Length: 64
Image (cartoon, rainbow, N blue to C red; front, side, top):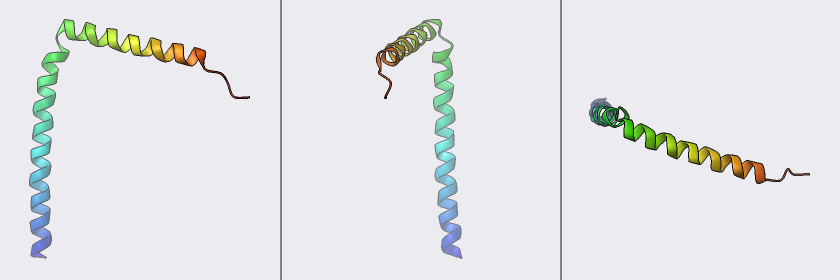
């Protein structure tokens, strides 16, 4: 019983450390996402990827 409690405590501590790390990273990413230049670059990259996927889809042959 004591071993299970110890293991659960360790798991709880590790999970909390992980969640705090995620919160800090998301907070930093929010500053980037608010930047107009970053948003423009992200939109350009996303548009390029979608165009490439569209071209690949248009050039594929349907199986008979």
